[in-house]
Length: 148
Ligand code: ADP
Ligand code: MG
Image (cartoon, rainbow, N blue to C red; front, top):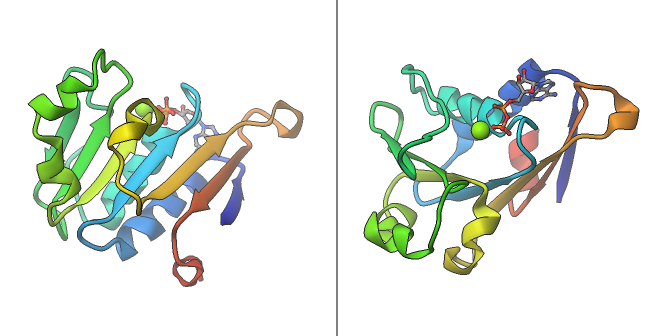
């Protein structure tokens, strides 16, 4: 378990970029945390680390947004608005989960039952006592060497 504290959006972005730089094909990152906590900021960092230059935002009207131009394919899921788990089947999620790109899933807790055993989970939390821009980022399932 890796715990990192950030005090502004840039730091969270850079953490994402560091992880994106070292990400390997087939890895699945899950991202949990309340609205406005910084999931998309983190994701934009990951995209940067994968050498994706086009803008990355939350895929609001589709469950998954595919980026092919980086070091490897990047599959950005946001399952916040998913109504039924069947919607994941309909988009053929397993081609992404078990493909040769990197998956990142915002609000992954909503599709818990579909997640494979080996995932890297990232949880972002605020702490009002530590200031408006403070975030605690807990990463589970990632080799600690990658944080050096
Ligand atoms: P989410 O995708 O989780 O709903 P966003 O990434 O869209 O959240 O928004 C996070 C907001 O919080 C941004 O406006 C960002 O500038 C701000 N922010 C402030 N401090 C931080 C921090 N330490 N890490 C990430 N974002 C931060
Ligand atoms: Mg978001």
